[in-house]
Structure formats: C-alpha cells, structure tokens
Amino acid sequence: MLKRTALFSAHQKLGAKLIDFGGWEMPVQYTSITDEHLAVRNAAGIFDISHMGEVTVSGAGAEEFLNHTLTNDLRKLASGEGQYTLMCNERGGVIDDLYAYKLSEAVYFLIINASRVEPDVAWLKSQWEKFPRRTELNLTDASHNYSAVAAQGPRVKEFINDVIPGVSISAMRVAQVTDLKKNQIGGFKFENHSVLVSRTGYTGEDGFEIVGGDEAIRHVWNKILEIGALFGIKPCGLGARDTLRTEVCYPLYGHELDEETTPIEAGVGFFVALDKGEFNGRAVLAEQKANGVKKKLIAFKMTDKSAPPRPHYPICANGASVGEVVSGTQSPSLNIGIGMGYVPLEFAKPDTKIEIEIRGKRFAAVVVQKPIYRR
Amino acid sequence: MSNIPSDLKYAKSHEWIRVSGDTATVGISDHAQSELTDVVFVELPEAGRKVKAGEACAVVESVKTASDIYSPVSGEIVALNQPVTDNPALVNTEPYAGGWFFKIKLSNPAELNALLSPEDYKKQIGG
Image (spheres, rainbow over the protein chains, first blue to last red):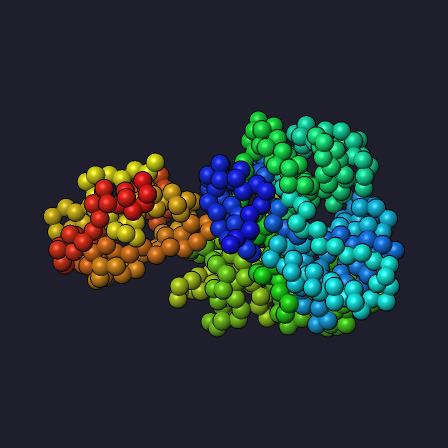
C-alpha cells in the first residue's frame, strides 16, 4: 500500500496523474510537464513535498554531532539560517543530501529525501551510539508530523506575504515572509497554526518552502492556489520538478548520488568543508580533493536531433562506451535533450564531444558547463 | 472525454487504423495522446520495412517516458509522415489528422477483424 500525503485528495480533485515515488503515491503531472515547468520558470508553481522527511536534532551536543555527521560546516549557520549539506559514510559515499536549518541555539531541523528516511535515521542512530556526548543530544524522526509545499517561481514573492501575513515569531526574525533571504527560515503564525517558511527550493528559481502540520499545509496549499491564480500559478508534479532540477543540475538521490559516489565526484564539493575538523568520510574526500577523482559528473546537451536522453543510456566517446546517463530529459526551457552522467575525467571538460546511445544508435552531444540552463 | 472517431478501428495498445483499399494509415488515439502528454519526439520505421501485427515499429517520446507504437496489422510500410517527426506536438493536437505515423500495405486484411470497434475501444478505456 502506497503512502499518501495530506494533500492526496487535493491532487485527485485537480485530476493529477499519480505515480509511485519512493513508496508514496504522488502527482507526476496535472496537465502537462512542459506547461508546469514553464509556469515555474516564468511565473509560479506549487509542489507537494510532504513526502520528504524531517529530523530534529537538539541539545548541547547537537552542533558537534551534526558537524561530525554532515559534510558542510554547521558552525557557519546563525539561528534562522540553513545550508545544503550531505551525509556520507566512511568511504565518502553519499547516504543522503539534505538541508540543515538552525532554528535556534542547539536546535536543528533536517529535511531529507523521502526515499532515504529509513536509511538516514538508521545511520544517524548508529552515529548517535558512537557519539561520546550522546546524553546531551535528542534525535527525533519527525517525518510523520509534517506536511510541506514548495511555492517556486519569480512571481511567488509578489503574493506570498498575502498567503502568510505578519511577522515571524521564531528562527529568523523578519517583518514579513519576503524579508527572508535565500536559505533563511522563519516560524510564522498561519491562521491558528505555526508553520516554518524558508526561502529555498530545488528548481533554480526564487521561492519558498512551507513546512507544518497536515491541516495547516492543506490550508496553505489552497490559499496559495487561490491567491496565486492572478499571478499564473499552476499546481506542479514530480515530472516538472525533475525537469526543473535537471536543467539547473541539482543532484537527485538515486540518480546523481548514491552510497558508492562521493560529493567530489558528483561536483558538490563546495558543500564539503574539509577545514572544519574530522567528519565521516573526510579522509576519502580530502584525498579526492587533493589528488583528483577518476569519474566525474558531467552535464551535456544533445547537438543532434534525437529522442530525449534517459537514465542508463550509454555515454560514448571516441567510439567506445565510457559512462552512463544518470538523469536525462527533454529540456522544456531549451527545447533540446539534456542530461547528466558519469564519465572518466578525460572526457569531463566542457566542449568535449560525446555521443549518447539511444536504442542502439549514437547521437552527438557536447559536455557543457553546469548549470545547463541559466536565467 | 476522449474523441473516438466512429470510422476507425483500434488496437488494444491504443493505435487507430484507417483503411483505404489495400492500404491503411496508423496513428495513436486521442486517449493515448492525452495519457502521454507533451510528445517531444517521434521515431518512425524505415519505408519498405515489413512488419507483423503487434510488432513494435515506432517510438513516441513524451517529456517523461518513451512508448513503443505497435503496428495493428501485418504488411509493408509504404509511407511515413515526415511532418510529425519535425513537429511531434501534432500527435497531441491532431491525433487523427496531422499526427498520423505511417501507412502500411496490408498483407493479411483478415487481421482487421481482430481489431476493436469504436464502441469496444471506448469500453476498454473506461469511456
């Protein structure tokens, strides 16, 4: 039996096509992936992200624990700020990529991938058992308590203050939601509920993510669609979420990232703070950063007219298969086939000519600088 | 509500076929195009290829997935709709007109009897 979010009946009413995503019955599209994608690039879109997991970590030992468990430097966060970070095993392989927020002194909030809640929580618990100051730490999988939506697109800032009016009452203190800067998070009163609002997203556009209880998020969803209607908002499914993040080369767990791939290979070394002291995977990551990697994540564009590249299609160079596509699609913004994949370092330079094998035939493509799409 | 023209025959796999003499035109139904949405690429068979009924011989790709198109009947591919490869959105906008895929010269016209009538196809898609 697939799990359903608090917004399931809202999706049904909107005529969504539903798919199994990490054990959740989620909307893949409502009308058309292309239309939903372009709504987010040009105006506004709203996504149900209630399937994502939430973990709270608090107590005097929380910062030290998380800084040992995650790759980015948590000490850089002031209260009300968040950062993209990764959780690695001892081999430097990625257990998950996530957002870590500091809500207040010694209180942290992690937003993790839906498909990774169980392995993440198991890993965090195993790390907690080894942590000397474990008595100074509370670690809770709060995924069941929260629903969430992402409102994304250049016009969201024109109406989000009308959806959630008023000042923040916790985390980052601001006079109104749009005073939050990128990666900041604030707690707001919404009707008679409390919600967390962060200026984050995974589409490459400006936008906000709102996390709260089921009832609060159902009301937020309806209110955003109602008030956002004047600004061209569309409900958007996972199909558009995937094309949007692929255009801007954001990794998706299970595609670009897995336990056998390091953040350095995946091109997210920027979020690995080697200078912060010891943390899980540091030895391998430091070695890779110093001496280089053997395989690297590339972004590419098709230069031949072809079917869209798809995951697992071979990447060829000099007539031989050298790697595999991990994400691929037709880009609704650029109207060409685009994708990402892993190749040996010698083929990873931008402008390198490669070929993508599609149903037995090879089509020309070129390695490009990330992101593939830029506003 | 999906459009199911009454002068066509249909395959369970959602292709339609329009017979004219010993030749038939093949495309996909309005229901199929609306399930696929956003058709971005069409790959047609080679002209002259001989196919069997039920054989995969074309591919239609939406943003999300690739789907095989099966020939509803056996025969030889005698004409291709080049405009649909240049403008795949025709599959969405005109599934029964400009969105056709290929014409096939029937080698066994009796196979037509095994295809679905518009009424039966309508039942199949729950219309």
